[in-house]
Image (cartoon, rainbow, N blue to C red; front, side, top):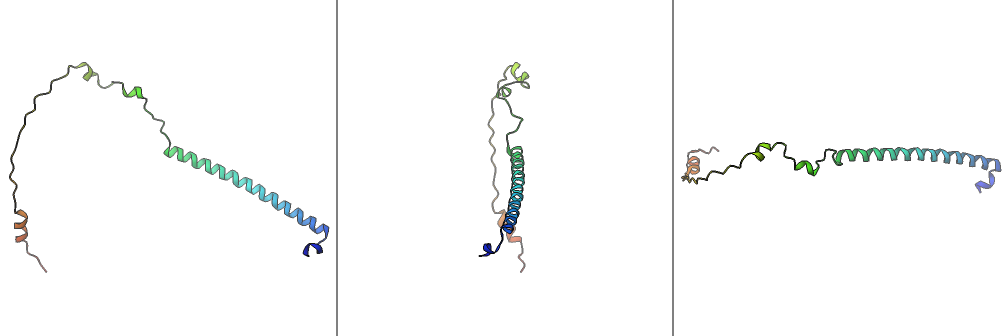
Length: 108
């Protein structure tokens, strides 16, 4: 009923306004999508930098190098001295706690 009372010119004007609004919203949507994609990429890069693999990796061949063990490699192996067994007997004092608690006066 409302549309019947509007003239053709008014309908064309309303259509043009709606098309402008649609284009404006489409442009805003594209801008927001681009921003979202940029932020997601920045987040991904930050996560990778924080939790990703380190650039300081050790090559397996590096572990086999004996740079600081030259003296050990060239020296003759020493024989270990015989181990001597020593036993010590201790006496455990008992009743120390009870004697201390008896001498302590409880105040109420």
